Length: 217
Image (cartoon, rainbow, N blue to C red; front, side, top):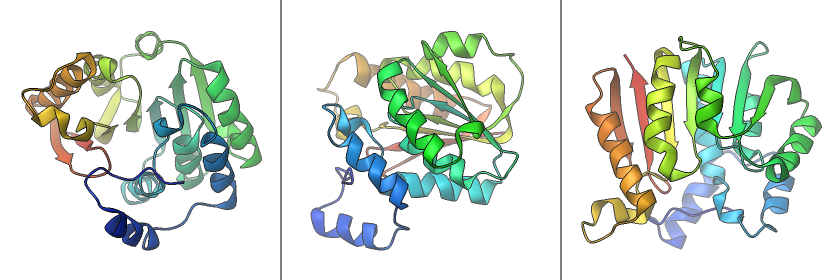
């Protein structure tokens, strides 16, 4: 039911899960339905959902950008943590996957907080005004797009806003010079750009499959 970090053995992973707030019944139902899909491993873990909720609570984030929605677990988790005037713009390319998300957003009573936009995320981002708008951006989409997403998100992030990017260790392959490939190389560029960008304070965290977390100065 939970996507385990490649950095943890089963025993430690179970221990962490036992000390993490559990998913709601609705979230559990979404997790179970998504598990039936061939692409189920694209779903975030229980611990990641809890981490995103935690970030929203401690940062006071109100306006959120999500790049890569899949079946909606991350957006459902974040929407339930938002204040009443909070909102999410969710970007994805799949009508099929996000149709599942929409059903669960409606069941959870948060569909009015989520503005789903279907199409390539770079196109959707470029169609937005280039001005600070978002308090938090969660990036969990096609890895080859990560460098472009970074450059398009930063201007649209408020000062003190947070970027969270998933899968930035690629199961450790980013650190292995013998490993190459379009997605691995793109993630390496993303991590290098985020670390070197004077507009950001950045940390690559060994959580899950790697989380790069950056705060805009």
